[in-house]
Image (cartoon, rainbow, N blue to C red; front, side, top):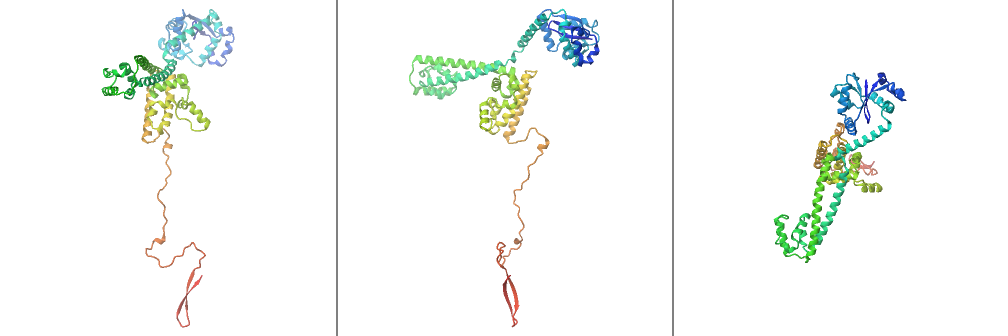
Length: 474
């Protein structure tokens, strides 16, 4: 039974002298305390040295990816039948499966093999006598640098620093562009104040100024490429009765230079926005589909990186960007904010005011899952998860907006709960006095005067035989 041991200098194959040691790995380190004791357990059978750093990098890259390199395949073919008959012990299970598929060779990789590899590595200098320790350390350092450079070279899309810088530059350009346009409107408004009210689009406004120059040239200048026909007609009518003051040719030249700056910055901003969208779809496609490219980029910028954003829980992601309001609410013991940067997403903007908090909470939960898939998932180009979660959030929003508050998830016991029944009708008691419809001739005494004496009618017969009636108090 041979053991495949990988080193920065090459592949080492050790012969396991006592196979029973694999069943007792708890005390295996006692047998590797010294190089002499280790040589009684394993013995170097073959060592395949790398020719140069390029071969070492190719072999290490294949081993990291769980693939069988060409050099290892040739070496194993030489050893099969000669020194390798039954089984090969390997550290990586994926590499063992690749060897088994290509060479039909049985490979073993378990915790016992891992412990054996650990013991061999502790006495590697003594078991590999032909390689000095300094030379092995230099090879390991060079291989580590080459492998890191290889990984950075073949995974440039995962550098989310570009997104952070791009979205910050985009915000700065928006502020600068707004300042330039407002300055241009105010400056040219002294000469042609009616132009700002007729042409509301900023880019069309600066292009119109650059084309016509002074307002006297409006009637003789063709503006069909910039403005619609009806707007152009209004502009010519306003130029004839304009209340603006006269300006010199030098003033017009400086205003035109400012218009050139606005047009150039606008063009660069559009190019930068396309670059940001492409970067977001390459790094965080699921998050981009769910919340949009600008909101996703601002979330990544606020967290610092995509990995840091993936570490945040959904509750933190929901209020990310509203830290001042959160700490102010905690200090004054008031209600905390319900949303931060996520408020600017399209789904939250579609919801009504009373449902924005609920939709923000659900969207933050789905965005947290999408971010973790983008940061830690193997398939970095799939958008299935983001599209699926977006449909769920939209369905929930539709239910809330329609007023149907059926829960999407929950147990059957919770769904079977009913509210207590309350009758709205008044309970009436039976009144015996309502049986007769004839008015009563007797005087009714109220029960509320118990001290009033009652009179009793007594019949008496006099001496003459007549009947007399008397009323006595009872």
